[in-house]
Length: 146
Image (cartoon, rainbow, N blue to C red):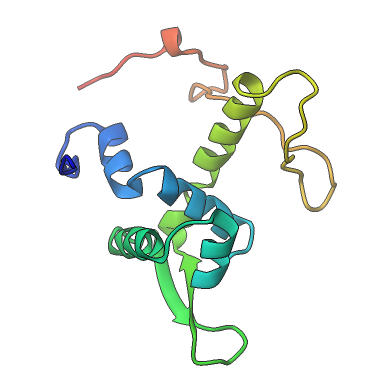
C-alpha cells in the first residue's frame, strides 16, 4: 500500500484542506455529525465502517482540530465526538458537495435525501461564489494571486 503524503505544508489552501480532512470517510463522518451523530457506535452503524478505520479517522480529525470529545450528554461514562468551530466551518463544503451531487450524480426524478431549512421546511438555497460586491462568479471570473 502506498504511504499517504502529507500536504500540510503546501502553499495551496485546497491541498492543506484536503490534508486536514483526509479522505471520503472523514467527510462522511463530518456529514453524519451535522446530522446529529455524536457517539462512536452511531458513526459506525450509520456508515457501516470498520472500528479500526473509524478510530483512525476520528483520531486524525481530532488532531486537526475538527472534532473534540466531551462527556456524554446523558451523563454516562461515554465520550461523545462534537464538531469544533473549525469543524462547523465545513458546513458549506458539505452543502456544496451535496448540491454538486444532486446536479450531476442522480438521474432526473431519482430519489435522494433533501437538505431543508429546519425553520421553514423548504430546500436550502443554492450556494454561490460571489465577488466582494456580491456579483456571482464562475471559475473563469477568478485567478490565483501569489
